[in-house]
Length: 152
Image (spheres, helix red, strand yellow):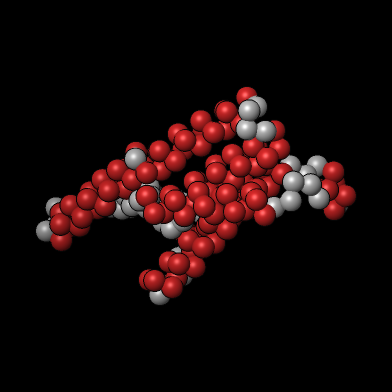
């Protein structure tokens, strides 16, 4: 079994997966320390510190550059994808999270006044990131990709 993983080791995927896992773990621990409650959703959910999406694509980009060279077409593709993902995390998804927060606030006002009878779940507010969360995710991804061995 171990021999299978050694011969089929993919450094790029390992770096990306490890950085995503570490970002989610850090996010969960930070939530527990700050809010004083364990929220299992933080282990897989989006939003929060650090950005796991940014960590994932940053690690994949650095790993690709290390394996294929920064002049390779595959590095160019992953770099462009990383830019889109990071931009989306700070822009579109962050705005969607702000909208969800405001809609939940409005729904709570309606609920308290007896006007809300939808019974639906609140909108998810943890969607996007501020620049510090994204920068932390990028830094984590770079560190993981540099520390993980290219071959085992």
